[in-house]
Image 1 (cartoon, one colour):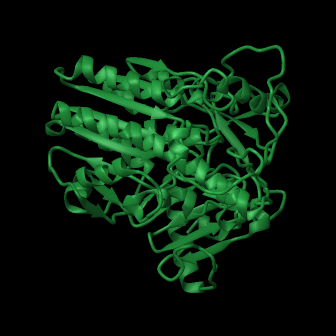
Image 2 (image 1 turned 120 degrees about the vertical axis):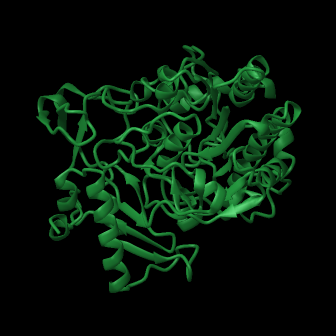
Length: 492
């Protein structure tokens, strides 16, 4: 048996034809839907990029215990478990957070791995002189912005773009190993993550009148741009989405060419979506995780059942992908994994959970049962108490500061740390703006766009109890209940 996972970053389900979009050029996503089961109720868990990838490895939520960071020494890693049980694992990626401090332990869990450089502000090409930068909407200062404009100068043709190089490496692995058995290939591209940089041929799918400033990198903040600028940026996203579709098609072609469908599982997924001006916001993380971000596309082909061209409405999450792949290869699923193998869900639409938990460390804690989405905010603007629990004290691109570590103490162990105590370090609560938005409850049946929060005490009480149950199952730190004003539920 073989398996291929194609993971895009920031893939908005509402921009995809299989989920109802009628204006984006994405014929290969339509083709994919004909060959797989399309999941209509897939949600994120831990956010954003590396917390989601930690779930992909460990099959459990992590956002209640720590912020962005590496795999921990006590974590179960799905690719490593496969590797240790005789399944060859290979990663190809241009997702540069893998080679930062906060992601440095993920790619080395595979047998082998390849990288393509140059996405966003990847510190790739060295230029002492500042680059020439056009007049842009929402310009910003800093090394990331400067480096991105240096990197772009080295990608003046499609084959030089990181996504193209990544898929080329992935297809090479298949060509080399198509006749072998027992391997897992993980193809992962940063696209269509911002900045929405791509070639003109993809922009030509979306002709429109726009004579304004350059705008393909929206800020993480409220929309302050003109309607024309917002529309243009959406078209820039759509153009990059069409490039993703092109390379997805190349993967489908090679699946067809060698009839890999007969013995190869295919998963096409994302870590999260992206706000393109909806709710008057851009991007993610700085505002509540509305469904444009939290409700994700997911496509799975399982050759054992052969079900394709059909929909599944079972509530599933990122945490389910690790146990699904382990079960597919006959590898024992560790007790610490909270996700569920989706074999029967794919084959028979069998549910695996009543509710799903999702969020970011220090932000809203969210719960959905597929109909309601409950967003629980901190009860004070200070967003305290809040701590990071880790044995790998790194942030996104730097280690914890000496100042932070001076205030650390040992805590635990937690149920999943395999007897290890961990560093308990005060968190600054950088998502204290969650307090400004407040607690919200949405009924997706009557308000699928989440435009009108409701007051329904019965539904809220039910969602609170589902949330608390899931938090307890995750061995949630006790102060999270205090931060969210849920103390009275913590001991019931």
